Image (tube, rainbow, N blue to C red):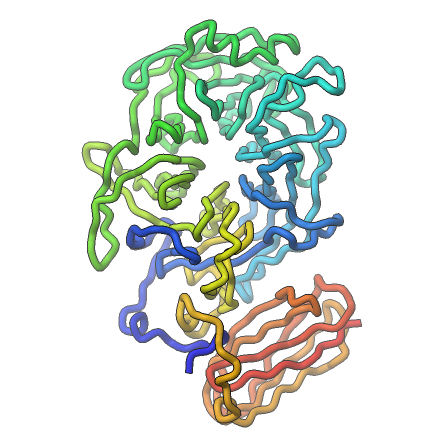
Length: 539
C-alpha cells in the first residue's frame, strides 16, 4: 500500500545506482512544461531552509518574493554562514539567516533569522538580485527608480545598490557613487575595487565602477559601455561626483550614445577573466574581455556566449532539440567553470552551460525545472561548491496536489516562496534507501486498516528533557524496516526529520535539540508497516 510517509526502494533505481562526484555532474532532466513539482536530476536532492510566512527570530514573519540568496561564509568555511535573502517587493526587505551544517546527519540548520532595517535611508524596495563582496558584505539591488527625495538628502529615494553587513544585520549605506538606475545585480572583482553591473531596463546599459579604495564603494569612477555586441568597444567616463550627477546616470548614458541592452539581469566574472552578462529580452548571455579591470578603457571580443539558438539536450533515455528561450537571469560559475543560468520565462529552467561550450560546438544541459507559477532566483555556492543556495519565487498556491520528498524523506509542497539548498544525494541527508515515490499523492487515511501496522513499541527517554540534552528514541519491531522520524511543534512546523534502518529486535537512536524553546513537541514515526506519535516535553 502506498502512503504519504511510505519509504521503499524504487526498483527502477535499485538496479543501476547513480554516482556523481561534483554538483555539476548530472544527466540532464528531460525538457517539459511546469507542473506542481521541482524537477531535479536523480543524483541530486534538496532541503527547505525557510519559506514565506515562517516566523523569524527578530520578530514578525518571513516576507514573500524571495530573490537573491547570498551565501556569506564565516571564516571562509563551507559549513557555517550568513545567508542573505532578498524580498523583491514594496517595501523591500532583506532577511539574514545564521545557518550551520550538521555533518552527522548532513543537514543544514537555521539558527537565527533577522530582518535588516533600512529606516535610516527611508526604506528600500524591489530588492532583486545582488552580490557577495570579497570582504563579506552583501550588495542588495533596488530594481526600481523614483524621482522623489523625501528626506531631502539630494538623492533619489530608490534606484541604488545597497550594501549591508550580514554579520551585524545592519545597513552600511546606499552606494550612491555606483549610479542611479534599475539595479538588478552586480559582481565585485577580486581586486576589491572593480564592480561590473547592468541596468535592468529598456534602454539598459552596461557599467563598470572602479572604487577609489579597496573594499570601499562610497566613491569612485563610473563608466558605461559604448561599442559593438559583436566586436570591440570602449568605456566612457560619466560625471559622478555630486548628487545631481549621480541621479542622472541614465540621462548621461543616453547623451553619450552608450550601447543599449534590453534588460541586463546579471553580470559575472568567469574563471577565464572575461565578463559575462545575461540580457533577458535579447535571449542570450554575452561575454567580453576588459583590457584592464582597474585602468582599462577598451573592451575586446564582445560576443554571444550562449542563447538565441536551440540546443540538443541528452537526458539519458533520449534527446531533444530545445530552444534557449527568453528570460536568462541569474548567473553563477561552479568549480569546473560551468555557467549556471537561471531562467525567468519559458519553462523556467536552470540551464548549465559546460565549460567547453561554444556556439559552434554547444554543450548545454537542463539541471532543473521549477514548480508551476515560479521562477528560480538567486544562486550562490558554498566555497567548496558542494551546496547550491537559491530561492523559488512566487510558485502557484495551487501546487498542493503533489508532494515530493526532500533529502530527509519529508514531504514538501511548493506552494509558497521558499529558500532551499541543493546538493548531491551523498552530501545532503541521511537515507539508508531512497525515499519512496519521488512524487506521490497524499494518502487516503480512511482506507488504512490495523492490518497495515504490525506490533511495535515506541519509547522516548528521558521525557521530559531539556533543550540540548541528549534523549533517545527506541523502537522495537518484529521485522526489518525503514522508519522515518519527524519532530514537529504544536503548530505543525517540522523541527527535525531523519530516516533509519531498523533490524529485527530493539533499535535505539540518539537525538538532541539544542535550538528549540521549552514546550511540548510531537515525535512521529512512520514506515511501510507502522506509524505512531508520542509527545516529547522539553522544559
